[in-house]
Image 1 (cartoon, rainbow, N blue to C red):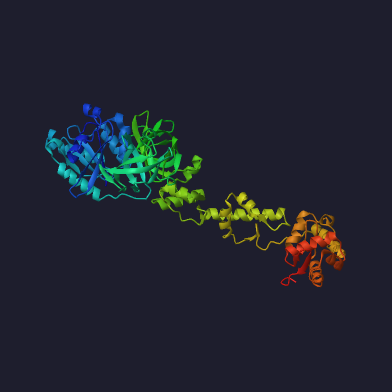
Image 2: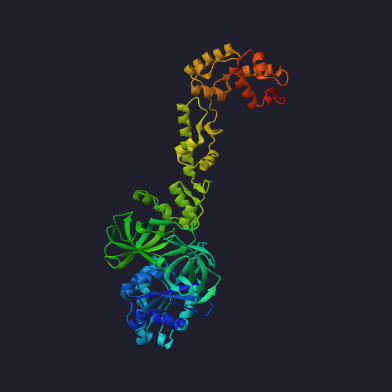
Length: 598
């Protein structure tokens, strides 16, 4: 169900026209009826000649209530722009047109109201002036229809024109429910109710929704649209939700309802901004501004990225104190406090821009080229190198990047993969240089050095053709623990001692190999660790096992000791090692050779 929004100068007949089109008075407040002036948003609906049901958001035209106007205009599909024939183009006409233009509203109808108060020549002149005013804006070429609501003049023609405009529009659905709250109240016996236009996704009864930025969780008890109860409501509809689990006092205009995990909250985002055509002096950073996004308004600070002042179009950083659910492609409006006027508007390019302004500025060209959520996700990944996929989806409205590598729900760009592989090789080479006797760097240490999660390291290793895994370590392909001249000399001395000792080698500490060299010899198979005290040469152990094989089944420690001519100091560690290695099978105090090992 599409939404038509009114726009135009104060007291030009917007509410009267909506009432003539729908049969419903959109002014809700007694003060509005008393003063004959729309103060806040009004709502009505009707069925068009085609059978299409359409909602209307009637906005105030007075400059004092521009904040309220902006709260309702962002979610409209078609603009019903009102100009009184007896007054013509006025200051708020220009400001409202500028807002529609900045928000990219490109389907509209111009209602020339109070046509009964002027002659045909005046009507023609006013229509020509309006057509000139619309030139080079998003509403250029919109049909202009003369109306006089009290006598019904032009109303049916206007309904047909709205039908035609709506037929030319489409409502995007990224399947991420998003409802900017414009009203909240309590109903006795029902509880909290919020209203707004559902601009994306669908909502069903019993859905769980989160209120942003507060983070409060709620459940949808019931749904209404145009006073009809529904089980489900889709995008583009004026919607009222009865919520369970959240109090009305916790909900402000400008809050947003959506699903947890699908939205990125930020206090700082980058965009491209365009100033209004009526702007006098350029925008400067030191001004005080209000950001209008969705149905909300917040004080904001700006940083210009491409020049010291802005008049025209340029990159901009916007900061607010309240974290906002912002994504790529969102439209925003800037109002300058000192001028009391809308001065610019634009499009969000990056909800999480680089910390330094110069880095943000350098990313502008890539981000400006993105036209879809997927292209925006690609642009983000190109600039960041790596990002969680959930963050990219939340920041772009579901965009999926064409990533070079995806690991543990994290994406890596091709350039980042290349940088990480180079860094891995450098770290491994440095480790080999510093620790020539060790087989490689521990995986956990390598992951920490290059700043990735252990799961990401595993994925990267699949691309690292120059590196290989050796258990829990990573090394260069073909790396061997070659002994230096000094270590070789120490090893030859220890080897001679081991050969001379035969079955009763000296303790490890007496061999004076040093821990690194000893570990290297064990890893290379030059020696075998039998216990914390003893190491043996492999061929010596083979001879010991062969001698044990000649003993009768059930041999004891004493039998083994006597057969080898050794002491218990060597016999017991040897037998325990043989038990662990599966060479022998122990049965009480006796042992026998395992036939599978013997």
